[in-house]
Image: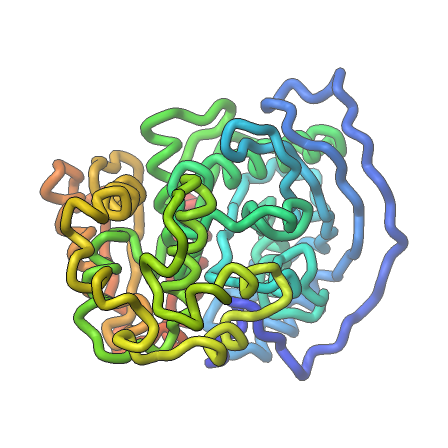
Length: 405
């Protein structure tokens, strides 16, 4: 199974059909169903249900294509969200089923990306992520693919990678914007909401679920979430890294460090955390022009070469208390879910360690969550790449089941 849902293309697929761009101006007098976060929506493409059934059948995914009965129209939207006390414009792709039936909503959060080309609003229409989301919409669901802050319309900002509050609020405001679009188009929508995502998208999904339970979300009733393979305990993720001699995705470390320095306005230079020449160069790697693999090629996978040895040795000492505080603040371990959450992780995953999910699941149960509410499914033999397909099959079948209950 290709790791196509995280941004790789389905090479054998051809684009079928096209449509003219069309602006949708929000009709404020009709938008009473949600907070008004929508700025603009542009219709970009329509795809027949039959094509989507064919695409998914060819993908090898074990999902029920007979449920894909509606043609789907894609929109790019921009919407308002908050970033460090300011209102900014973010972006997302919305897939809408062409139906007069009442629809529910799914927000699917993507995995780690570093380049603008990988953002959902910049993906080719033949990309597997776009095709899968469209297929899901074809079953009668509104499907949202948020870019996240730092990509698309907000590409001039540094992405707040693994920052809980900015991640959750940007997802929530994108969901509100989708509801406003649906209202403008006079579609019928209910209050049922699902959240899903893999890798960083798993973290974003759990962070948003936590936000909905603790803060609330107007006009929506979260029915279930499906986080998979995320580093939910950020502090434990750091501790895992520091037990290794080498790590095959060193850009993850650089990403977190530079994102936290930017988000929290740390005065410390990056040479506090990294050795030269990497410390001086890292800030230039996250300008949206380079993918994660390209950044990896510019860094060392030997942690003793990449990281400042004083930081490795003293990460839990008072001198680095601000780092530990940020890791703990963004770790999703201090809450008790009461709405169903289906967790997944491959037990052969060494990119985002399987044990991180195992331990977070145990902490949530210890916090008082019911095992009937929070479940954990091991994707047997799944690596960070090969676990994607089984996860998609599991969560899609669960959503179909819940929608039919």
